[in-house]
Length: 225
Image (cartoon, rainbow, N blue to C red):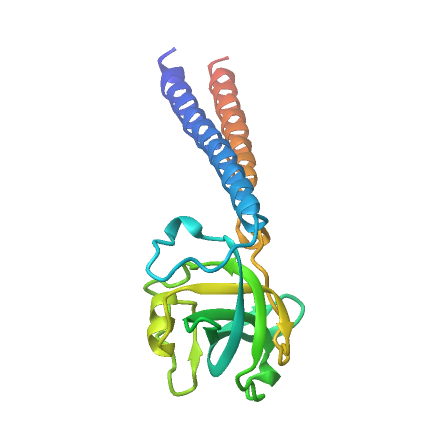
Protein backbone atom coordinates (compact mmCIF):
# COMPACT_ATOMS: atom_id res chain seq x y z
CA UNK A 1 0.00 0.00 0.00
CA UNK A 2 2.88 2.38 0.66
CA UNK A 3 3.75 2.34 -3.05
CA UNK A 4 0.29 3.75 -3.82
CA UNK A 5 0.42 6.69 -1.41
CA UNK A 6 2.65 9.07 -3.37
CA UNK A 7 0.97 8.53 -6.81
CA UNK A 8 -2.48 8.96 -5.23
CA UNK A 9 -1.46 12.17 -3.45
CA UNK A 10 0.20 13.48 -6.61
CA UNK A 11 -2.87 12.62 -8.68
CA UNK A 12 -5.39 14.15 -6.27
CA UNK A 13 -3.38 17.36 -5.71
CA UNK A 14 -2.65 17.77 -9.42
CA UNK A 15 -6.29 17.26 -10.41
CA UNK A 16 -7.45 19.62 -7.66
CA UNK A 17 -5.12 22.37 -8.88
CA UNK A 18 -6.10 21.95 -12.52
CA UNK A 19 -9.82 21.84 -11.71
CA UNK A 20 -9.54 24.95 -9.53
CA UNK A 21 -7.85 26.78 -12.40
CA UNK A 22 -10.69 25.75 -14.70
CA UNK A 23 -13.32 26.94 -12.24
CA UNK A 24 -11.44 30.23 -11.83
CA UNK A 25 -11.53 30.74 -15.60
CA UNK A 26 -15.28 30.11 -15.62
CA UNK A 27 -15.68 32.80 -12.97
CA UNK A 28 -13.53 35.11 -15.07
CA UNK A 29 -15.74 34.29 -18.06
CA UNK A 30 -18.86 35.33 -16.16
CA UNK A 31 -17.14 38.54 -15.05
CA UNK A 32 -15.94 39.32 -18.60
CA UNK A 33 -19.39 38.69 -20.12
CA UNK A 34 -20.97 41.02 -17.56
CA UNK A 35 -18.35 43.67 -18.33
CA UNK A 36 -18.90 43.32 -22.08
CA UNK A 37 -22.65 43.65 -21.60
CA UNK A 38 -22.12 46.87 -19.67
CA UNK A 39 -19.77 48.23 -22.32
CA UNK A 40 -22.24 47.35 -25.08
CA UNK A 41 -25.03 49.15 -23.23
CA UNK A 42 -22.75 52.16 -22.69
CA UNK A 43 -21.73 52.32 -26.37
CA UNK A 44 -25.36 52.16 -27.51
CA UNK A 45 -26.64 54.65 -24.92
CA UNK A 46 -28.27 58.01 -25.67
CA UNK A 47 -26.09 60.54 -27.47
CA UNK A 48 -25.00 63.46 -25.28
CA UNK A 49 -23.04 66.69 -25.61
CA UNK A 50 -19.40 66.75 -24.63
CA UNK A 51 -19.02 66.82 -20.84
CA UNK A 52 -18.12 70.30 -19.54
CA UNK A 53 -14.45 71.11 -19.42
CA UNK A 54 -12.89 69.97 -16.14
CA UNK A 55 -15.43 67.19 -15.57
CA UNK A 56 -14.10 63.94 -14.09
CA UNK A 57 -14.80 61.75 -17.11
CA UNK A 58 -13.47 58.40 -15.85
CA UNK A 59 -17.00 57.03 -15.38
CA UNK A 60 -18.03 58.29 -18.83
CA UNK A 61 -15.85 55.95 -20.88
CA UNK A 62 -17.68 54.74 -24.04
CA UNK A 63 -20.42 57.38 -23.62
CA UNK A 64 -21.88 58.39 -27.02
CA UNK A 65 -21.41 62.08 -27.80
CA UNK A 66 -22.02 64.46 -30.69
CA UNK A 67 -19.94 67.52 -31.48
CA UNK A 68 -19.85 70.04 -34.30
CA UNK A 69 -16.82 72.01 -35.34
CA UNK A 70 -13.75 71.51 -37.51
CA UNK A 71 -10.45 69.74 -37.60
CA UNK A 72 -7.42 72.04 -37.62
CA UNK A 73 -5.19 70.12 -39.99
CA UNK A 74 -2.93 69.15 -37.07
CA UNK A 75 -2.85 65.41 -36.59
CA UNK A 76 -1.03 62.43 -35.17
CA UNK A 77 -0.72 59.16 -37.07
CA UNK A 78 -0.80 56.08 -34.84
CA UNK A 79 0.68 52.97 -36.44
CA UNK A 80 -2.14 50.49 -36.97
CA UNK A 81 -3.49 47.87 -39.31
CA UNK A 82 -6.78 46.60 -40.65
CA UNK A 83 -7.71 42.95 -41.02
CA UNK A 84 -7.67 42.19 -44.73
CA UNK A 85 -6.54 45.73 -45.51
CA UNK A 86 -2.90 45.73 -44.52
CA UNK A 87 -0.91 48.27 -42.52
CA UNK A 88 -1.89 51.87 -42.04
CA UNK A 89 -2.54 54.53 -39.44
CA UNK A 90 -5.19 55.72 -37.03
CA UNK A 91 -5.67 59.46 -37.59
CA UNK A 92 -5.91 61.51 -34.39
CA UNK A 93 -6.82 65.13 -35.16
CA UNK A 94 -7.09 68.26 -33.12
CA UNK A 95 -10.77 69.26 -33.27
CA UNK A 96 -12.15 72.69 -32.39
CA UNK A 97 -15.80 72.75 -31.40
CA UNK A 98 -18.21 75.55 -32.15
CA UNK A 99 -17.97 76.82 -28.58
CA UNK A 100 -14.19 77.11 -28.71
CA UNK A 101 -13.03 73.90 -27.08
CA UNK A 102 -10.13 71.91 -28.52
CA UNK A 103 -10.30 68.14 -28.09
CA UNK A 104 -8.88 65.01 -29.71
CA UNK A 105 -10.75 63.23 -32.49
CA UNK A 106 -9.91 59.69 -33.58
CA UNK A 107 -11.16 60.01 -37.14
CA UNK A 108 -10.43 56.41 -38.10
CA UNK A 109 -8.13 54.45 -40.39
CA UNK A 110 -6.11 55.29 -43.48
CA UNK A 111 -3.96 52.83 -45.46
CA UNK A 112 -0.19 53.26 -45.68
CA UNK A 113 -0.49 54.76 -49.18
CA UNK A 114 -2.63 57.64 -47.88
CA UNK A 115 -0.19 58.73 -45.20
CA UNK A 116 0.98 61.83 -47.05
CA UNK A 117 -2.38 62.74 -48.57
CA UNK A 118 -3.42 66.30 -47.60
CA UNK A 119 -6.01 66.54 -44.84
CA UNK A 120 -6.46 70.26 -44.20
CA UNK A 121 -8.90 71.56 -41.62
CA UNK A 122 -12.48 70.72 -42.49
CA UNK A 123 -15.89 71.25 -40.89
CA UNK A 124 -17.45 68.09 -39.45
CA UNK A 125 -20.33 66.92 -37.32
CA UNK A 126 -19.11 63.90 -35.41
CA UNK A 127 -21.02 61.23 -33.55
CA UNK A 128 -18.74 58.98 -31.56
CA UNK A 129 -17.78 57.68 -28.13
CA UNK A 130 -15.54 58.96 -25.38
CA UNK A 131 -12.54 56.73 -24.97
CA UNK A 132 -9.12 56.59 -23.31
CA UNK A 133 -7.49 53.36 -24.41
CA UNK A 134 -4.83 51.71 -22.28
CA UNK A 135 -2.32 50.93 -25.01
CA UNK A 136 0.98 52.19 -23.57
CA UNK A 137 3.34 49.97 -21.60
CA UNK A 138 7.07 49.76 -20.92
CA UNK A 139 7.65 48.13 -24.33
CA UNK A 140 5.93 50.87 -26.36
CA UNK A 141 8.48 52.85 -28.40
CA UNK A 142 8.57 56.60 -27.98
CA UNK A 143 6.72 58.46 -30.74
CA UNK A 144 8.67 59.59 -33.78
CA UNK A 145 7.73 63.26 -33.57
CA UNK A 146 9.69 64.20 -36.67
CA UNK A 147 7.63 61.79 -38.75
CA UNK A 148 4.46 62.43 -36.72
CA UNK A 149 4.15 58.68 -36.16
CA UNK A 150 3.10 57.26 -32.79
CA UNK A 151 2.93 53.63 -31.71
CA UNK A 152 0.00 53.80 -29.30
CA UNK A 153 -2.85 56.11 -28.41
CA UNK A 154 -1.58 57.90 -25.33
CA UNK A 155 -4.34 60.42 -24.62
CA UNK A 156 -2.49 62.73 -22.17
CA UNK A 157 0.64 62.82 -24.34
CA UNK A 158 -1.33 63.36 -27.56
CA UNK A 159 -3.34 66.13 -25.92
CA UNK A 160 -0.15 67.89 -24.83
CA UNK A 161 1.38 67.50 -28.29
CA UNK A 162 -1.68 68.95 -30.05
CA UNK A 163 -2.50 71.51 -27.38
CA UNK A 164 -5.91 70.01 -26.65
CA UNK A 165 -7.93 68.79 -23.68
CA UNK A 166 -7.14 65.18 -22.72
CA UNK A 167 -10.52 64.14 -24.09
CA UNK A 168 -10.66 61.66 -26.97
CA UNK A 169 -13.72 61.04 -29.12
CA UNK A 170 -13.62 57.98 -31.39
CA UNK A 171 -15.74 58.71 -34.45
CA UNK A 172 -18.55 56.34 -35.30
CA UNK A 173 -20.20 58.57 -37.94
CA UNK A 174 -18.92 61.71 -39.62
CA UNK A 175 -21.04 64.22 -41.51
CA UNK A 176 -18.80 66.22 -43.81
CA UNK A 177 -15.75 65.47 -45.91
CA UNK A 178 -14.08 62.32 -44.47
CA UNK A 179 -10.92 63.06 -46.53
CA UNK A 180 -10.39 59.35 -47.12
CA UNK A 181 -10.42 58.46 -43.41
CA UNK A 182 -12.61 55.46 -42.55
CA UNK A 183 -14.22 55.67 -39.08
CA UNK A 184 -13.49 52.74 -36.78
CA UNK A 185 -16.34 52.75 -34.23
CA UNK A 186 -15.68 51.28 -30.80
CA UNK A 187 -16.92 47.70 -30.55
CA UNK A 188 -16.49 44.87 -28.08
CA UNK A 189 -15.10 42.64 -30.85
CA UNK A 190 -11.66 44.01 -30.09
CA UNK A 191 -11.82 43.00 -26.43
CA UNK A 192 -10.38 39.49 -25.92
CA UNK A 193 -12.56 36.95 -24.16
CA UNK A 194 -10.78 33.60 -24.22
CA UNK A 195 -11.68 32.44 -20.73
CA UNK A 196 -13.91 29.58 -21.95
CA UNK A 197 -11.05 28.19 -24.05
CA UNK A 198 -8.73 28.48 -21.06
CA UNK A 199 -11.26 26.70 -18.83
CA UNK A 200 -11.64 23.86 -21.34
CA UNK A 201 -7.84 23.56 -21.48
CA UNK A 202 -7.49 23.28 -17.71
CA UNK A 203 -10.34 20.76 -17.42
CA UNK A 204 -8.83 18.71 -20.27
CA UNK A 205 -5.47 18.70 -18.50
CA UNK A 206 -7.22 17.52 -15.32
CA UNK A 207 -8.71 14.59 -17.23
CA UNK A 208 -5.31 13.74 -18.71
CA UNK A 209 -3.70 14.01 -15.26
CA UNK A 210 -6.32 11.70 -13.78
CA UNK A 211 -5.78 9.23 -16.62
CA UNK A 212 -2.02 9.29 -16.12
CA UNK A 213 -2.49 8.72 -12.39
CA UNK A 214 -4.80 5.77 -13.04
CA UNK A 215 -2.29 4.33 -15.51
CA UNK A 216 0.54 4.70 -12.98
CA UNK A 217 -1.50 2.93 -10.29
CA UNK A 218 -2.32 0.15 -12.76
CA UNK A 219 1.40 -0.26 -13.54
CA UNK A 220 2.21 -0.47 -9.82
CA UNK A 221 -0.50 -3.10 -9.33
CA UNK A 222 0.80 -5.12 -12.30
CA UNK A 223 4.29 -5.13 -10.86
CA UNK A 224 2.97 -6.56 -7.62
CA UNK A 225 1.18 -9.45 -9.25
